Image (cartoon, rainbow, N blue to C red; front, side, top):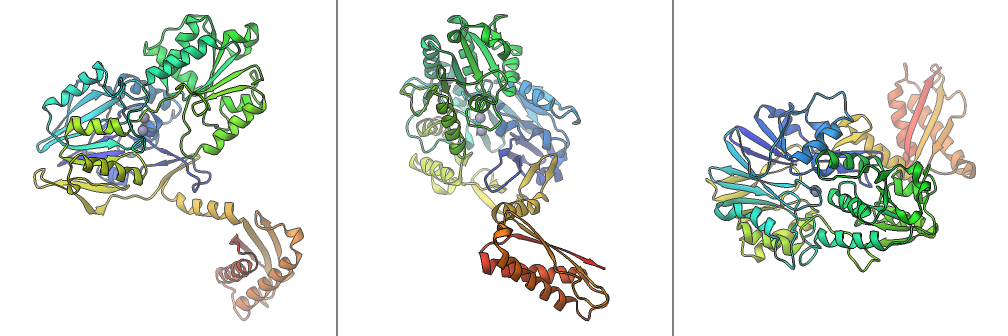
Length: 540
Ligand SMILES: [Zn+2]
Ligand SMILES: [Zn+2]
């Protein structure tokens, strides 16, 4: 999410979320912190969504109401995807979505805004051009070039002609693939290779890909029709997106091309293609269930050919490996982009060569690299400098940084002041900042387990009535730790009785704190672990 503010007008660009990370156990998604926007909602003129990927639209159901439901401006397909997703949140107020097209011009407050079409792995992706009195702010959003040997296609060259007479004050650009040299593989090559595979495979073909790869799904379905094969679609998001593609008239399917999984047995295996979600090894997605024989109608066998037409999203290496192992265990042939000598997947993001092309084409005065790990942002800044931009015209941002263009467009600077930045987490039905405490507990529980002490004190004497009960989970196996238990009971007894003796009435909070400290310290000395210690002390 990027926010552009000029005088009394705020324009929000994209509203995504981030998937959970290893250090956020049990959390579904991480949202951008929108407190600044909540406090300034009367200034928000528009939310502009560049394209329909979840890291750009995923936050909409959680955030829009908090910021006063401002109008959303986006292109046709993205609008359909946002609406489809919103159906899963029936309790929310309806969104005010305004469909715009590239080439259109809209005025948000005092700011005229235009859009241009970009190539990405999802159709209707667009870049945003915001005109300010000091020059123009531009972001292409997620983009790549659909080039031939480094020359953009005619269609793309036309899209970028809009910049012939724009004085670009600031460019904000995607840095995801800055580490990859040259130009990225054009998607058309992938389509050609997939069509070959559809044509030449003499067994059942199972293709796993991202459900947001509209063009690729469409090509596969078209190839299936061309070579007389049926398609089974597996996975809810895949089914949804095929419906959207048909509604958007991007795809026309013959009535009997798509068959249901139950009917698969009615066709010879070499006449059937299964199009499935889960190429990242997601546990409950169609591919994994088919590979584990947990799917009601489909299971992978040694006659099958499985194509994994996707890259591995960083962080998913282990789950993808597990998926490949499970498929291999069934004896099927696997074609993955790593093992295949033909391209069956291409990235959606510009490689270094394309980024260089963008900088040369737009000639921005100032530059802020976005999207990607901090290290990649740095590399992107270095690329800009290697093309002649002075260092003081570049700001490498961090989350919540406020960057200001000052002196009538002569200077760019990061302010000392920051926008609120605490993690906002979606945890089941709960959304909020307060979840961090919960998160810390989960991390500790996951690491060292918990240790519960139950003791009852005689309120007259301050003595324990009997030896305390101990319950632990995920810490040590108690039955085999009798000596440790014995010593811990002794520590507990001493801590409680020292804390409560001579105290009338007994301050239970104080006793609990004392016993928690003593036990935590003792367990750490003995085991080098820090389980969460929970004392339950009753007065009788
Ligand atoms: Zn994207
Ligand atoms: Zn993205």
